Length: 253
Image (cartoon, rainbow, N blue to C red; front, top):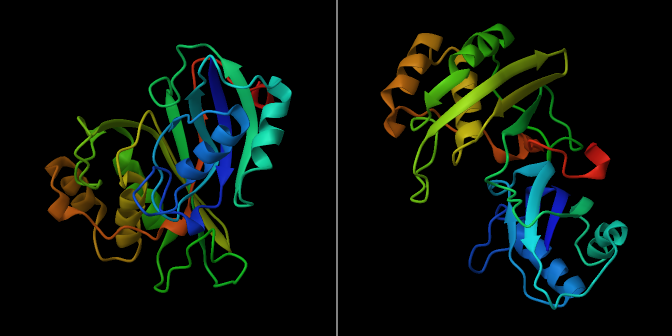
């Protein structure tokens, strides 16, 4: 039997989603709660990795439950797991699903949001970035169009020995601005390591006049990490939603 989990977390105090030696991770905390409830050591596989300090309001994961695992009614799973999780991680929904379901490989779209606030605030510091230097909104919008479509994102990624291809289809890169905030939404079929923060770093470089949109386009086509701009800080980034061919959770039906 497979268990699917819809998870939200504040990534401030974690070294990212994926387990790492001698560091606290979201995956580790979720696996410990699953083990305590189902009575077995069980690996929890996420739809994707998030960097240290990055948040999620719609991470999806699955766990393959062994035959000897404790039996718990589906509607009580999230409640039980949440009693054993720290306050900065929460299971929004849980569902028993088909044995074939895979949180990572079955996903057809991921959506990230990056939140920028124009004025510093102690209430925003964990979940948004406040740039110290001025930037132009219209140049952010102009540069965002470079990334839409099927591209090799080697330039705008971190090296990951497990990544076989850096080709991704960015279906949407949208900039919404008002007097107080900027929200950048990026939707793609997949993301490679560091891609979102690198893309937004490039957009911000253009917005500040340090680079041009044409130069960023050339860098994308160059497939060379030496052309990469500075990554934006992680706290503004949130994995908002992961989409599958069919609905997995009753709360999203």
